[in-house]
Amino acid sequence: MADGAKVRTVAEVMTTDVLTASASDPLAKASARMIERGVGSIVVVDPGTPVAILTERDLVRAGAAGADLSTARVSDWMTPNANTVGPNDEVLAAFDSLNAHGYRHLPVVDAGALVGVVSIRDMLKLAQVLRIEHPGAIEARRGLEGVVVAETEVGDVRGQEGFYHYRQYNAVELAEKRSLEDVWHLLYEGHLPTPAERETFAEEIRSLRTIPPAVKGLLPAIATAGDHFVPLDALRTAYSLLAYALDFRSWLDIDKVTLRANAMQTSAVMPTLIMALYRLNQGLDPIDPHPDLAYAANYLYMLTGEVPEPGHARAIEQYLISTTDHGFNSSTFTARVITSTGADLGSAVVGAIGALSGPLHGGAPSRALDMLDAIGTPDKAEEWIRNSVMKGERIMGFGHRIYKTDDPRSLMLRGVAERLGGDMVDFAKQVEKTVVDVLAELKPGRNLYANVEFYAGVVMDKVGLPRTLFTPTFTSSRVIGWTAHILEQAADNRLIRPSAHYAGPPPPVPVPEL
Ligand code: ACO
Image 1 (cartoon, rainbow, N blue to C red):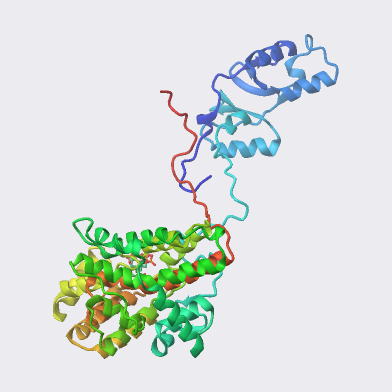
Image 2 (image 1 turned 90 degrees about the vertical axis):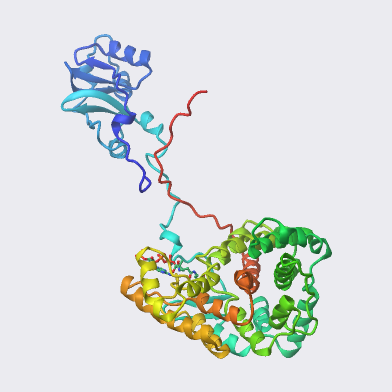
């Protein structure tokens, strides 16, 4: 029976109008009454007290032995000392008793008195008596923590070690030494590009950055729909339109080359969509991608129309590289689940954007900066954080499902923030230390440290990105990881379809007549 489901008792399923006979009755009389009532047994009583049971099986035995039913007595063929159950016994216990003895009926006895009979037929009315579990079913921990659900060659996160990698390469080292395009190539093609491959790949991306005309014309409506502009919601809507306009199909109906082309188009156009929507909402014209700028510099360029300082472009590039992929995080898992159904790549990416939008996942960096604003000055940090944690609130940008030590992305981004410099960086470092200390005191043993989101907000702010673009910016890099996973899922697919324990009141209840 399902954990948490109500236990059902014999009293709930038994038949109370019990057919009884006396031991001295002729067998013919007892069997005629059983046929008349359409039941397979009769309880033999010695006024009020059950002493035995006479079943169809006993009648078959009597017939086979040539007994004369009119002269034979119930006492000659009944099963004496019948097993009984109590009305408050669990149905499952009664079922086990029937099963163990091969019986089909059990008298129900309360304080020595016959109060009912329970049969296999009564139990079969209860579908959940013996819930058939899927053979080999495994009980997963809440939130699927620690549950391995697939194989991947894209990368891995080793939480205890504070280490993660993309196809064997330490991701932080990649962020220090390589461009985003190189990492993108690594994720899609399985290896870092040669100089010639780098050129070809960059050329391919360049040609796909432009928003298709069928979508471009509708962007002003999306950017200004609703009173409150949420760039990520607008992006989700515009990207969905793009996937539809470009005729992305179920990957079951297209070849690998077309699916990869869908992935390239998606990752290449995402930054352009983000910035076009943002500018349109501000009443400004979108800025076309700069043909000579690489991904990260072009990203900042499309916000202002100014070629960014190299230091700013490199800072945002390092952030983007560090967030391209991260194991089976919630949004990546979402993308793989949707892909496993054979859905088109666009549907999987739209779903993943939705998963990323949540404050427990990708929606935290702007909230982390809001927290710095709310704290105001270093001397107020401890009191503010202490009060928040005491109230049961979560400190945004801290804690992680996998990392129980420093998040390597946070360490790297703290370094990037220090390089950019400024009062806010110093303040953020003081707040980080205070949060870690307060959480260690108030939440001992939980090992809560700054995650990627804390310094991400600081870095994005320092390079001039408005807060509402923080999560869309995260989306622009993570989409490369999502699509790499989508390609991998499609290459070796099995429908992802787990099960759940039903924990509500037991079924079935009769459907009320109208
Ligand atoms: N502030 C205060 N307490 C926290 C925090 C936090 N940021 N994070 C975890 N805890 C506490 C919880 O209250 C809980 O305490 P309890 O044992 O007294 O109930 C304990 O630590 C364990 O928390 P869980 O929610 O079980 O941890 P889980 O692994 O499910 O959550 C998560 C991970 C969602 C990231 C969590 O740490 C959190 O909410 N952090 C704040 C939001 C955030 O920064 N999100 C971005 C994550 S990074 C990314 O997705 C890219």
